[in-house]
Amino acid sequence: MQQTPFDVHAALVNQRGYHNHRVNTHSDVISDGILQDLWRGCPALRADLEAGRVGFWKNKKIKWGRGRDTDLIIAEPIVAKSRGMQGALTYDWHGAAVDARSKPNPNRVRIMIEHKSVITAHRNRDARYDDLNNLVQDIVRDAAANIVIGATVMVGVSEYYLNIPDKLLPNFIKKSETGKKQFDEERFSREILARVKAHDEILFKDYSFAVSYNKSDEIKETFGKFNRLSRRPQNNRSQLGYDALLLCPVYYDNVHEARVARNNDFGIDVDGEYQQFLRRICEDYTALWGRSE
Figure 1 (cartoon, rainbow, N blue to C red):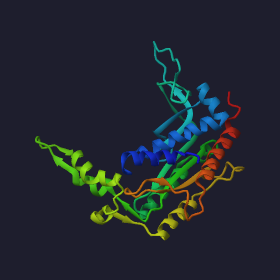
Figure 2: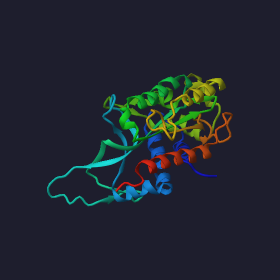
Figure 3: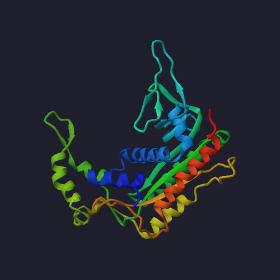
Figure 4: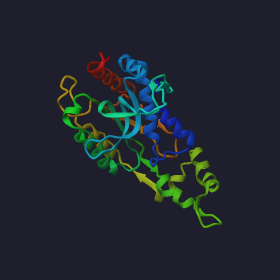
């Protein structure tokens, strides 16, 4: 079985014990995995990264529209120049040339990818959908023609979800002797985390106030909602829309082992569609920038 970035994230959740949707780990893990796979499988992009013609940045703000943080940007760099600095290239985790003083040129973005998830309560799907829909609409049309735009959405398919970050963690805040609030790690580990790692299903009953219930038709509607995002035909770059969009079903409930839901009721071939996602990004990038000097 092929390992995708979503498998890496699931393994991280299992190592930690539970999924915390309030931290940025999800988007960083997915971005790193996509970068590594594009590095291995897209020669045109790899050549540009190696030569320093482009760099990558995570969680950077782009100036168009309302100016939003974007999870992953590949762009031509702007390198700050100052006296006494030689400008020698350094090398990151996969060998691409990077200059520590560089930042993305907002007028020379080549790839941008955003990550979303709907895992807790599926009633939150509309806000996440609006985020992705607005992202495309915010990009200036002329600029969008030369940007490969992608998005991934992790969709939870479990019927129950124990919301540890929002509903349980606040109960383990205590005051220190100086009156400062601090997290009671020892008590949380004993009362909650040990039971989570043991996959104790009685947690759903003992902490029913912290459980989100997702009906199968609600999950189906979430997939349908995101499939209505505008897609750009490969032969029509003047049209606004996503070049690559991947919906990945995951089984996260913070009691059972987290995993990518390869066996799902929604007709999604996770491995095949992930390869198609990478292939579309690479093909469009190569068509636009394959002869960059």
